[in-house]
Length: 231
Image (cartoon, rainbow, N blue to C red; front, side):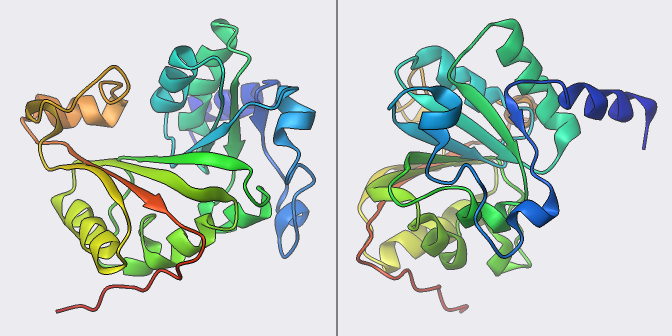
């Protein structure tokens, strides 16, 4: 591990807006803050929005700036990247931002029924060879239903055409309500102040002339999401 990473990990331990549970605090059981994020960490009753696989936290921070009436939690396992967003939020004194360092496979240990209003998934690893590991797979979507409000929104921004088309097909096959879809966001006329927030990786993709895909759909409680069948 590089000296810079070690310094960042040490600094993260001092950040008041970072939660880093120990493995034994969540393995096979619920985390102490489950169902209590607003009460014990934000001190309000505002809607909670997650960014899963938040990386450097650009979207989490960008959304928090625009919506002070909501609470935002960026989730990722890579602390050296998360450090950037956490530090920015602290320097700007944003009271509605937290970062949770954990594996997303354990996400149901952290949030209670109806505790989350929306989910953003921004430029995740598309995992094109491992369907079950995709953050928009049926496996993960069924997990999100445990804590997302009924018909809560799931947003996907990605440079990966494969992941976008897979997720769009999954949503259609399960008759999910699709709010927005485009395979070329910045030439769709759909872009707005929210969708124009750019992550570090998104800007790199745009600089290479790549198109950005965007999909937004509702996730109802009554449906069990069925996986797509490989053709």
